[in-house]
Image (cartoon, rainbow, N blue to C red; front, side, top):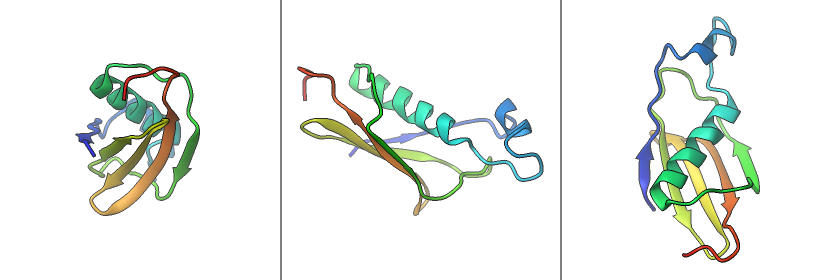
Length: 99
């Protein structure tokens, strides 16, 4: 399973409104980063997200890593900060995509 760092700036503008005084990384941003990183590694684009689960909030201080695994019909992923699970999910592979 490849491991990819998901770097982001602790002063990213999204933290100003999500949430002031107690900032967390928005789930949609986590999913966007995961999709972009996996697409870059595999050289293909995804058209859908089949499943997403948020297990624990990520803060600007968290170092995030993405693990993913290509299966027969989907790419499963997990975002972690050290041993703590942040999010997981699955992108379906396009029909006829190489494995």
